[in-house]
Length: 63
Image 1 (cartoon, rainbow, N blue to C red):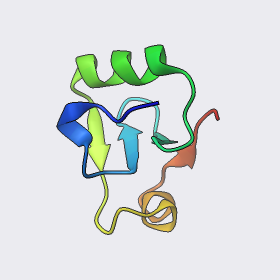
Image 2 (image 1 turned 60 degrees about the vertical axis):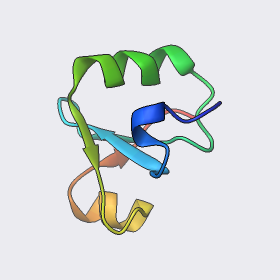
Image 3 (image 1 turned 135 degrees about the horizontal axis):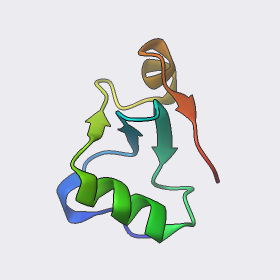
Image 4 (image 1 turned 90 degrees about the horizontal axis):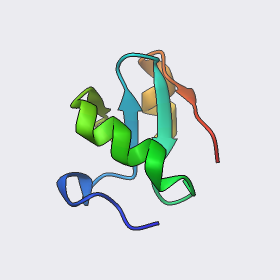
């Protein structure tokens, strides 16, 4: 799946509503990512790593 244009520099994006993080390099469900981006409830992480997302309370979403 191609990364959304707004998040081309990020691998991990989180859903602020559910505290779920998605790996854009592994995510196969484009509809889920598109809906998240449209909701404008996206969190990004610095550094852009899964451990940082988990440090902020996010858990890995579907693959």
